[in-house]
Image (tube, rainbow, N blue to C red; front, side, top):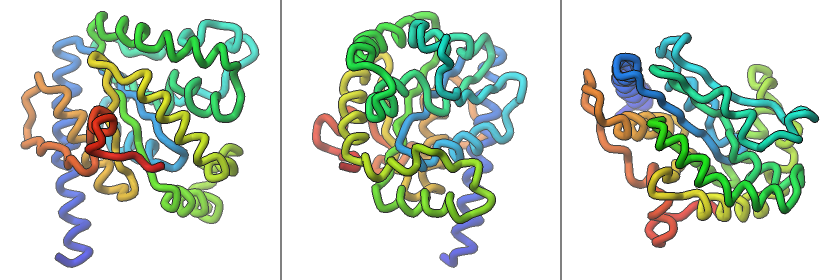
Length: 256
């Protein structure tokens, strides 16, 4: 298949999935369901692009994307989860967190923005916090977007040279590669401690952006399984989307 034909086929598949996303939001509004999707992953792993494709045709009033800045001096003295709670969805709403409460176990741990005691408290508390959300009938979907070190370097370099990507440049980009191993260790500890039967982690291989976005949507639609969809929902590609259980059992691996 020619490159242009492959691109057209991918666009057609994405459009069909986006129609289903609209179905899912209409269902959520009718059933007064609350959808909360957590996007975590390394810098440049494709969180922004995936979220854009998911929300592109959803209702603005019932959809919010939350990407909080660093905590203020006042927020630093609050209960860690407190700043996230006001952004949780109400009936019929979707909230997509572009990084979430897991900042404490990721960038804050690697960069030393919080104490060892605060990090330990978070790891202890997060399963209980998420259990409360689920018991209150929030549909919680947690995604870890994984990327190889070489692909991350390529994308970070593109940010610095592409004038349209200047807004994505972050001071932390400079240390993403330098502290690659530290981020890997923090990721592994975080996923192991917070992967529960109630709130499992789903891992996504994102070196191929197009395939990752399509399979993320497939996974979300498959999780919202009470909805009747206009178009068929293919199962996610198991080489791209897999439960963290597959990692712990040695059947899949994350980038070292």
